Length: 515
Image (tube, rainbow, N blue to C red):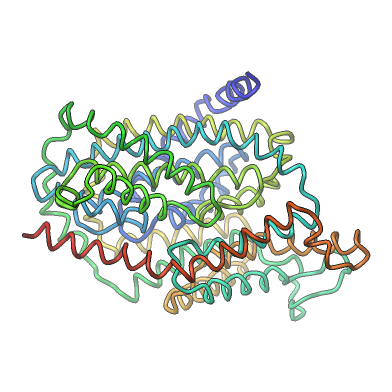
């Protein structure tokens, strides 16, 4: 009853004209960005952070806007997957396998509607999972001391490479780069300057937002400039016919158990730090294929359940990833790492005290997720034709808009030309890292958690009088070390195989569909 009462208070916060409008705008913009191949939720949220801050929105309103964008991007990723066989982001890759064959059969509209309903189901029940599970994790988090928190942050670095990662060395390098950037500034305990090179602008360290917008948004602009294909999307998008929107009732009924299984699988994948929506989508599709179609007679040839399973899975994982971020302060995915930066920039510290110190923010956010889900369902079915037209926008028009939003937004927040140049520098670094196939999320995580990790390590050493065994001095710490080791080594053992399966399944199914 206490949870329901808190949720009711959250709806009282979210159900204001401003917050409803922000949820609607966020859902709409998120779907548009998700429909554009390559952007994805992390980039979508990063691009709109400057707008949220420059408008002077409060903490709750800013988070409502950005999480609505997050959920909207997860919805929108399916559009290009189904219509063009080009996944909007990595989690939407599995939707191509049966979504595109349905489009070739003249059932593109039905596939889009089914995927919209599936996205709603996955997100809706994952949000209920967030409501029920996050407060329970908070109780466990109260058992954490400085040593346990240090190990918890180590778990985040060890696992955020993801199970689909094929090069943990690059993930480790990215994490160390982020930790190095976090050390820039004046040491809060000793007052000593570190890596500032006597530059006054660096005395306070690197602002999270500058790093995020540079690494994600500007590097995306540079990548598009490097591979400029002007009207490629426009040419592909003009020949797409949506057709009939609503699937028949027997088709909807046949997917009910698919939705149940994929919701559970996706939510669990989201809660696990580093697994994320890609694993949720892949596992949901693979399990469904083994359960209902073990001999591959219909999957890959336009089976509606092959569209529903990955869409439910990746959207349930998106909601599940918010659980560790809010309750433990550890992001469960790349996008929640960006949202974690937003919380910290608003002077809100995620973790066990969040529900006690900022109940209006956290419960208002959760209530807004329910509202955004309903808005997304209502937007995505009748406005499919509009979102399809987004695929016709040439990159030569889109990318200058992204760059303009980044520069104007950051300057309106900081008012510093030095920060603008620093953002450009991060954009170039992000572009180089992308070319070297080095993941960006561990860099961001290092910048976000580096200071907290250092502070907790120092506290643990002070309490133990310099005894390093304090880091393995409790059963909880030992369990966390075990998770970190498994999370880091598992991708090395299984990651390449899993990644190759995801990549190999797409062209094979494409050939089958062409036949």
